[in-house]
Image (tube, rainbow, N blue to C red):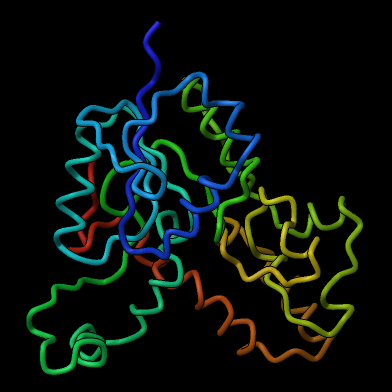
Length: 256
C-alpha cells in the first residue's frame, strides 16, 4: 500500500515550528510508518516533486510568496498550516502597524526599491486551508493529532474556548493573582496551557477565541488594576492581521 507523501515548506518565519517537529522524537513514531517524507528542508536535502499533504510554516509577505503558496496549494490534496506565522500572521504581522514604504527603508536603507514586500498575511487569507495547528511554536501533541486527522481524512476542530479552561484543569495559579498580565482569557485553547504550566504567561500566540468575553476580561483588568494598553500591546505581538481575515493581499476575497 502506497504511503501518503508529505512535504514541509516554509515562508516568512523563524523555522522554530519545523525545529519542533524535527526534535519530536518518539511522538514522530506515531505517524512515521504511515507517511513518506519527500521534502523537509530542516532535516533532509532531498526534494520530491509530488506530494499529497503540504505542511506550511510562515506567513505570506511578498508577491513571490503569493505565487508560490498558490502553486503548492494546486499540487497538494491537503494543506496544513502550523505555527502562528502561518495561521494568524504571527510576529511578522507587527509590520502591518507601519507604512510599507517606511518599513522597507528602515530594513533595507537605500536598497529598499530592490525588495518586494506586501502586508503580512496568514496563509488562509491567500489560499484555502484544510487544517491548522496554532501556536508559537506548535504544541507537538496537537500537531500529531492534526496530522493523524489529515491522514485519516477526518476533521479536526480547533478548541474555541479560552486557555484559562485548560489552565484551571491543570490547577495552575492564575497569573493575575500574581499581578502579571496574561492573555489566557481571550486566547484559543488546545496547547494544554503549555506556557503557564511552565510558569510563563500566555502571549496569545494561538489567536483569539471567536467570541472573547470582553467584559469579563475588562473586569479582571480593573480588579487587578492592570492598564488596558498593556494588554493591547501584548495582543499586537501576534494578532495584527485579524481585521483582514479571509482576504488576499489585494483585499479581495479568495475562492476555494
